[in-house]
Length: 375
Image (cartoon, rainbow, N blue to C red; front, side):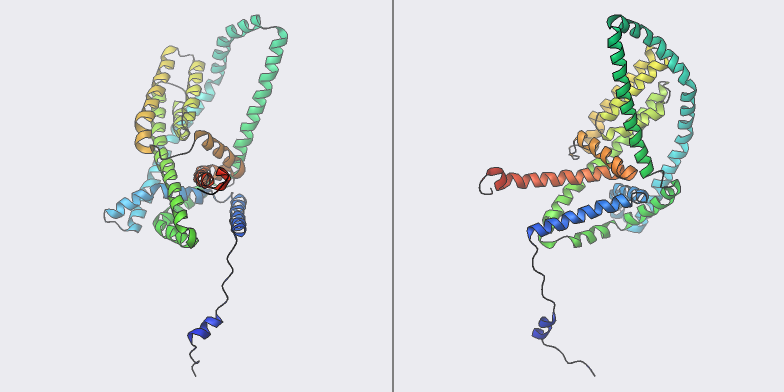
């Protein structure tokens, strides 16, 4: 026996009543609570998120290449498989070639540390003698106390930061999880990237969807300029400085050069730190002016390469993140969430930067700024 058909008014009467519209304050509380819950979740899961965040970053970096291969006729799964295999094979080969060289340089550096100390002591004696002649014993004692206090504070801060980064990430996550989980996460995210984007788009509140899409495009533009453009700049500079400093004969030249190149994600900071480290090590080696001149030439050419070719071509004006804001976000991310926080720092800084500019635009148009009607 079939159930009798219901008329449209009867079906309408059986539907649950529509929910009353949320007020502005309720919407703000809802999104604030959601953001807080998201941050708490990241903090609680920071010990297991590293391979997933790394895989997401690699997938985002490689997505344009997958789209290009699709336009050439490959299916998405074939493009994803090819890109993932080639990327991780090249990465593994690079590690296989670099690790022995870096290990040898570190061993050589440790063996030569006593010689560095002796050279620096001999060069510092005339300066210390001249300083003692110019200052009174009381001034020298105060200077030594101040230097010791500041040095202890700086070393303690650096040690605590490094300890927090290692404890929050690599020390908890084994190397095996990075080696095996990250490629799997990269493959599936790269394969389903458009599906993920479409799913998130379907969750957007309909009455603000266009505005949110516009701001997300701004975030993507910022991230694309930094993650893709700046990452390519850093890799190129790491190779240039590493090879250049090694050819000059600088101890730890490859390691210092690579760190200098990867530090270029913050404009000028990485280069300055690398230059100071290289000059200090060159002085400690006591190799004469030819080594200092070679180091200076490498950094001069590297700075010209970065400023005149790489950054204008690959990054341009798309980043929109101030170096101070990047430094703060990296330090804050590392202190709060460990190594995962460092990986998430730049995306979070991009989101906050875009949202801040959006809020300022609306503030300038509002009565809060003009003191009257909205413009």
